[in-house]
Image (cartoon, rainbow, N blue to C red; front, top):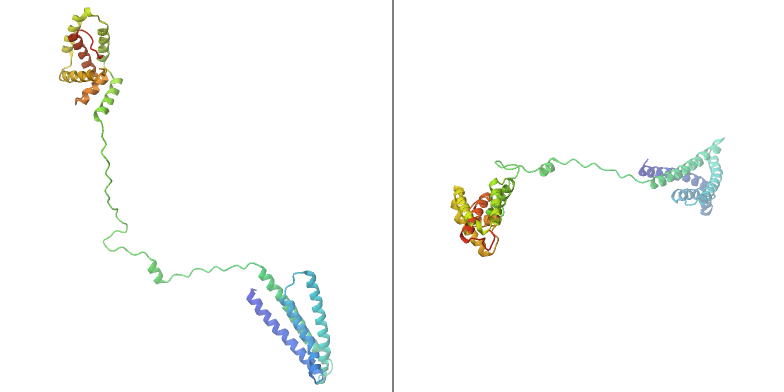
Length: 305
């Protein structure tokens, strides 16, 4: 039973107990003398039992010893009320015409009803207190199904005809980036140096050997150097002949700036002047320029070529 059912049952048992007490009080008043004081004294034992039962059922006990004392006192009050009510009711029943064993048995039905109702009321009160100590489970209500109007309102709106369900991407121009100044000649020079390092032709080694030999020659071999110069001019590749003036200009600029005339510096300066040339070709031009310098000046120029 839940709490509401127990509460309704308690009120029904109280009504039964009140009915039994009312019968006992009526019999006691009829048996008493015809004055209010006698009638009040005769009516008191059943009323005392009713009040005792209500106190026992409504007031909880926190100490076991106090509970024992209360039960003993309630039992004594019930016994006194039963004894007095029994004899008063026997006299009333016999006065109003009942004979034989009826006057002795009829009061037992009233006292028994009062005892059963009192015990039931105490038991129901104990059951309610136990139910209150237990945690109450809160029932979870299932959500109500939405109405058709609510479903229609929550449904996504259909796109108008002729339009796509998915939004089209918006074109946005990319931010302009500042132009990057790329030194094409420097990058080309680095690539050419890498290729020449891996695949340098045998002409470079021969020209380096000739340069070393020419550096070690003395003034007595100047005539031979001039002959070698003529041979170098003759042996210069046809595609390098147009670049020879550009090489002389680059050499003169380097000498004026006080820089060493080497293959790398000469190649870099030729490229800066607007000519495209490979490092192997620069080596041949450098050898030709050195031979020309020896033939013209009779000795090595101030800045090493």
